[in-house]
Image 1: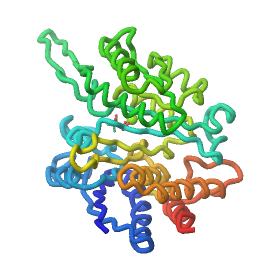
Image 2 (image 1 turned 180 degrees about the vertical axis):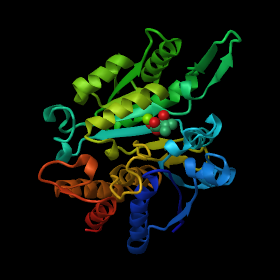
Image 3 (image 1 turned 180 degrees about the horizontal axis):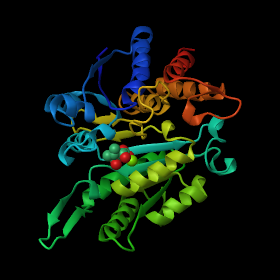
Image 4 (image 1 turned 45 degrees about the vertical axis):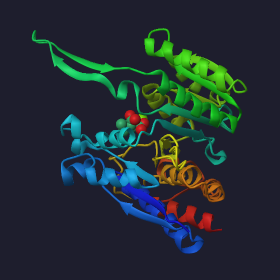
Amino acid sequence: MATRSLFLLPGDGIGPEAMAEVRKIIGFMNDKEAAGFSTDEGLVGGCAYDAHGQAISDADMEKAMAADAVLFGAVGGPKWDAVPYEVRPEAGLLRCRKDMELFANLRPAICYPALANSSSLKQDVIEGLDILIVRELTGGVYFGEPKEIIDLGNGQKRGIDTQVYDTYEIERISAVAFELARTRKNEVCSMEKRNVMKSGVLWNEVVTATHKARFPDVKLSHMLADAGGMQLVRRPKQFDVIVTDNLFGDMLSDIAAMLTGSLGMLPSASLGAPDAKTGKRKALYEPVHGSAPDIAGQGIANPIAMIASFAMCLRYSFNMVAEADRLEAAIAAVLDKGLRTGDIMSDGCKQISTTEMGDAILAAYAG
Ligand code: IPM
Ligand code: MG
């Protein structure tokens, strides 16, 4: 069987600890299930800056471009607060997204039954929650030019970021959202700020036109992004798929993550367009949580979002649907048993370490 190439970028903070648990699962799948994964590993974020003075080296960037899929941990930490903006840890992640053209970021927020009481919201509000945020990832204010601080010469400076979207960018991300909706409850809610932003007016127009032309069977609604944030906290189960821009998606997905009990639970997939010849799409999988420098190196981080990101990798990059289902079921089974890392600990449960959580999930997967 052809090998399946994975490029691992564990990064900073709790990234390496979480990635170590995924590496165990990859090892098991290779040894016992002849999965044929080949892995290579590189540096990204602060650790790459320390080694090469760049947030990701050109050599590692080439490997990321060549791999079937990239597994990404987390970047950043106070150690690098003062490094120049161009080489700050986050620049490594943003370069991956931009160079690999990963325009579609899928952030599912699922409430595991066992965690329904560890959310800050009432149990009945989030029990059974299953929403998918589809975030545009290579455009908008993250990358728009000009992006600069200019000196006005009168003792004042001006900071400028540019929110910009072209029709094709909105078309392709909304098509991804509509296609995914068809595999779920068939509902898309598009969020923008058309009441104050021209890019929001265009967003709304293009999503509406794409829906009419290609996906009339899907139920489409629109919401202003601020109201969307409010509704996510008020009645999150009203949503199926939410499609939104880069910055709103960043904020709304953090809100959605916390609905499920902990940021430590949320995986994500960032996908490019399918190649016209091979049908393959570039892909990067990362937990939504950050590098959590305050708890890094203590062995207490929650590896579930990283492991669930690997499950998404199995599903979307390798079409290993049965394995992805089993891995996700293994996570649920371990939670059902009452095993918890500190961030999701609750009364009557057993608190375990990062490696114990990884081992328990692998054992449940292995059956
Ligand atoms: C995310 C993160 C990143 C973002 C940071 C680390 C640059 O918050 O993936 O949500 O803002 O996109
Ligand atoms: Mg974020």
